[in-house]
Amino acid sequence: MTTAAVPETTSDLPMYEVFGADGRILSEKLNEHRLKMFPPLALKQMRGFSTAEAARLIGVHDGYLRKLMGQEGAPQPETLPGGRKLYSLQVIQGIREYLSLGGNRQYVRHRAGPEHLQVLAVVNFKGGSGKTTTSAHLAQYLAMQGYRVLGVDLDPQASFSAMLGYQPEYDVQAGDSLYGAVQYVDEQRAMSEVIRRTYFPGLDMVPGSQELMEFEHETPKVLASGPAFGDYFFVRVANALSSVADDYDVVVMDCPPSLGYLTLSALCAATGIIVPVHPQMLDVLSMSQFLQTVSALMSVVGAGGAKVQYDFMRYLITRLEPQDGPQLQMMGFMRGLPDLADRVLKNPVLKSTAIADAQLTNQTLYEVERSQFNKATYDRALNSLNDANGEIEELIRKAWGRV
Image 1: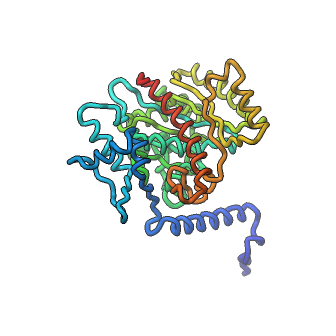
Image 2: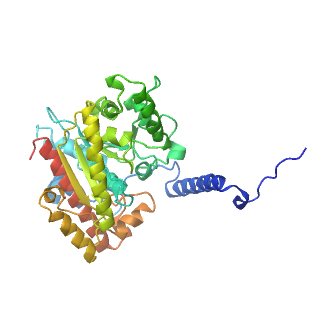
Image 3: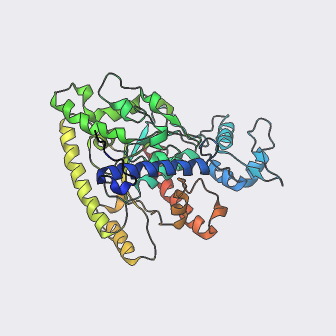
């Protein structure tokens, strides 16, 4: 009896097995890298903020914040050697609540009364549009402003999850993604069970994983069996989110780069749409096809009973290089179309080495220290992010009737 020889190298394997071997090697090494970057438990931590940064986030002057720290009952920052103050996001939120004790809602941003949960879908099926980068920075920005934010990773690639501290191969088990809460079987989990805390105060998340693809495989079978209205795919994300709506002000969904059933369900759950687009001809052409396809599919879903009404829909110019003439022309082209101009956000997000370098360690620009970069480069990138995210925040506040 003879046995097959075990290949000594991946070069001896069939190519489909090489793919799997390479994937496992990469996953292992990335996890080792994460353990090295964030010891001892591979947990990320949010940096602290200076007095000036904390004052800007709270919306007060530096001097007023310093006086406030002398008052009894006010949350206190950490005092470093040399007397420098360092404010955590928890302390900043505590100061907001302290300032609001007299009923002033200017500082605590939580929604109240008739203000409905804002569900933002960040969507585009063109790769490289900056979708995940947009989702991560927007979710963190809103949490920093004091909103209660839930990030939902709907992309099986789970890059959004990785940026918020979860590597799907090691941290996400079966049923831990949104799929666990929207699947059609009796073992469906409660939405509250798949939500996880993150290291970023004010920001929770539902991680993504490859199992999200199961929703695309199961839905056609369910549709073919003639389900009741409650089983239709287009209400499942909305139903899951509605069960935790009281706990959050804003949901940010990073949608997959495809127009499958999960994306359509997310679009049906959304109250606002953000479409990131890189200002180049091929990207804008791809986006035009995407928009027409979305329109056709949503009309079919609407005919099936879905009720879709958005508070706003906006195009966000991403990865803009201000010295690139063709990019500026394409941005001008979009803003010059009368029927489109009002839906293009005024503030683009610049392409920056600071953002790219931060992502090397699965971090956003909000997490890294300014001292790690050229200060002008850092400030330019940070200002572009804050301006774009601030514009989206204003749209949210307008939808609530606050501005």
